[in-house]
Length: 142
Image 1 (cartoon, rainbow, N blue to C red):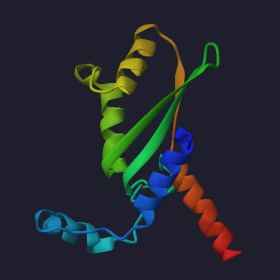
Image 2 (cartoon, helix red, strand yellow):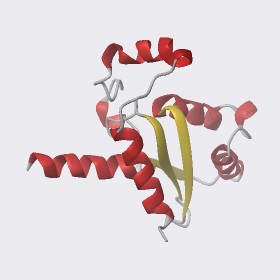
Image 3 (cartoon, helix red, strand yellow):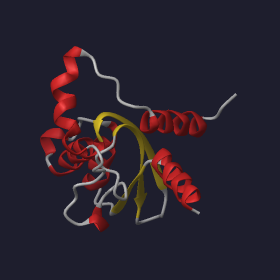
Image 4 (cartoon, rainbow, N blue to C red):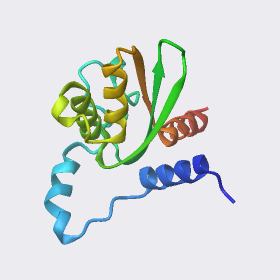
């Protein structure tokens, strides 16, 4: 039986390597998306991209790790976005800043609990499949 990491990695790999199938209802959206379909990131500063230059990927399973600075414990959060990751990321970060969105996701609930208790924390974002894909591409270039 496959473990969760293998399932997530296989899903992301399949999504990122399959050509996009278009039906009539999404033709307009697909046309807009194909303007520059080679672009994987539009961050002004590539160093700050949450997914290391792959923030415009869609249908991505991602992992967020919240590390408490007071006792160095970590709390993982797994999420999935159908739209591009960057839109989902912006929604998450907005829910961290605005109290009216504090209950919009389990992640925002956790962040607000830490903030309410004055616990400093660090948030890191990654996509296991994108990391695996980058390693695979590097191996092919060698």
